[in-house]
Length: 219
Image 1 (cartoon, rainbow, N blue to C red):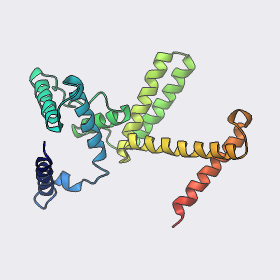
Image 2 (image 1 turned 135 degrees about the horizontal axis):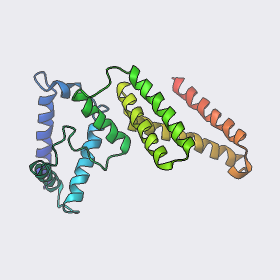
Image 3 (image 1 turned 45 degrees about the vertical axis):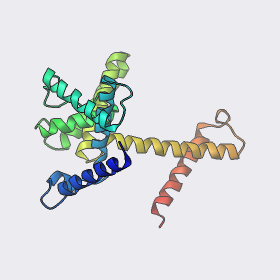
């Protein structure tokens, strides 16, 4: 595809987006922001990856990839692979994001908790069941209960209007920053992890948290 053709396609896409978000456009599209579209983009990306896995590994261009994806989707529907009302959420998606997408679809179909209160109760119930399973020493059962707890937490995230995948990603980033702070301070003191106590590292961890808190409140 030439540069001129690419510019034309982009222009057509921008026109469609402008109509969808215009006064007489789609109500859902008009409400979307870059942040709110992130889960949709994630799901669409993994659908595309699924399509690539099912077809040619090296398609010639973007247009060929999209065409291939549409052909695969059409074949799935023809073969009856998309009979579920939940649709085909890509199995390659990160588990938290996939769980939230599935529960969101189930909710749209009316299969959902009536309010957030029983969701809190479900989380507490799953924690108790996980503790009981872990105490029994049954690893398989413990794994199942852990999965149930994670799934209930995803439901909680949805009721709190949060994306579980994004929340966990931010927590990982915070942990990494604080751990790097500990590493830096230990290196500055000529210390190593195996020669430092847990209490010393925990003190540095709390220092890192305090620094982050000050940075958030500073103008």
